[in-house]
Image (cartoon, rainbow, N blue to C red; front, side, top):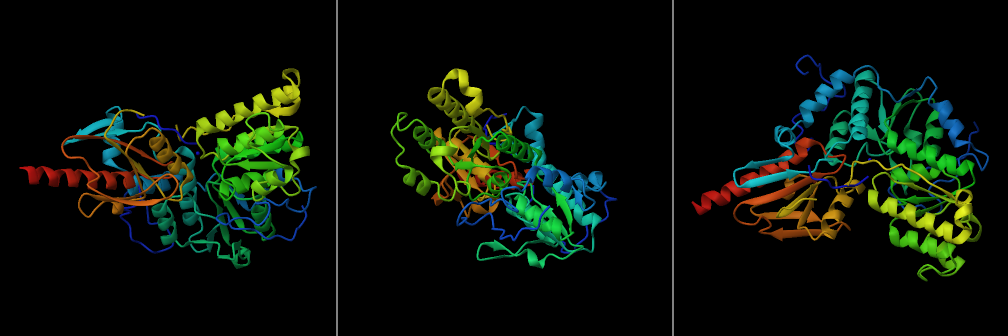
Amino acid sequence: MASSLQFAPLSGVSSTRSDRSLPDFRVFRCRKPTLSVRCSGGEPSSSPAMAAGGSDFDAKAFRHNLTRSDNYNRKGFGHKKETLELMNQEYFSDIIKTLKENNYEYTWGNVTVKLAEAFGFCWGVERAVQIAYEARKQFPDEKIWITNEIIHNPTVNKRLEEMEVKDIPIEDGTKQFDVVDKGDVVILPAFGAAVEEMLTLSNKKVQIVDTTCPWVSKVWNVVEKQKKGDYTSIIHGKYGHEETIATASFAGKYVIVKNMDEATYVCDYILGGQLNGSSSTREAFLEKFKSAVSKGFDPDKDLVKTGVANQTTMLKGETEEIGKLLERTMMQKFGVENINNHFMSFNTICDATQASSFDLMLVIGGWNSSNTSHLQEIAEERDIPSYWIDSEKRIGPGNRIAYKLMHGEYVEKENWLPKGPITIGVTSGASTPDKVVEDALIRVFELKSEEALQVA
């Protein structure tokens, strides 16, 4: 699900239904360990992915067996056509359709809109939501739970809430799986779930509906391969993000780095301070990454063989640069002829996140969406006036906007729309429905129309 910006729907969900089942579609086209499963939103007190069942637990074999069990489903339940028609009804946008049909650029009145080609709902996100919809249709009367938000979009999650898909409750940062009973249905979201959570649910004999994005599963395969070869996984991600927590749970030894600076620190440590001198002692290393390393991690022993993996919503270019930096570091340390014994290459980047000239940019997506935050980051780094909003409700009253910067700072601004004809760049996170974007653009059109009337 990665972040790119190449310029090329639910906030207004029309349905206010609160019944649990979906409407008719005639109108529309191992061992048992003792577990303490931590909420992905919290900061783990130690490793975010403690080995399930001990060091001999084979996560790959467990997942292989789980996917072949009778209580597991990741392909839907035969209701794809109906659910996609319902999603189209709820999320479709005529404005976005017009933009795509006109080479991603169109003018309404005195507003020209340029749409990013890598835009909005990616295939993995659409698939996840569609399977979740199918689950409610397949199990109209059963309790349905979900281990995390299906995607990071508030209106999509609100729609599932209306269908009575309930979040696993959390107390003191720990998920309370005791509420789940045999016979219940549990959805694993697009970001995946930690292997400990899967094991807990498997032991409970519940129906597991797995909507994990295939790109995320691909990363799991990479870290499992690195684990088998005794490579330490350098995971480019955010250690408190549910996707990275899940990925780390399938890894062996790992370090999670959130950006190039942290990756450079790791590489400098490998080279004994000969890269840029940013690293320090072993104790300082372990303190810096205390919440972002595997249990018992020793940088002096565990950075001899390394490989790279990533949280799929991180910036594509930065992940690639981290991989190149690590490869150069291992070459310098161990010699070009030995690189294959010390570094494992990778290719696990989803292309949903990668600009053009315009007066300002609207970045639209959930404020807890990593993917969307990186779109805002791209705009800010290129000094483009950019406004990250989660819905059209942030625009107004009047020519006013409330938005967030890439690091999460909340900002309010008056007179954000320039007077006269303007060109707006528009992009949205991989979890943002077209309808949410349309609603925001309609607010812009309304403000510019009011301006024109005032001038007249």
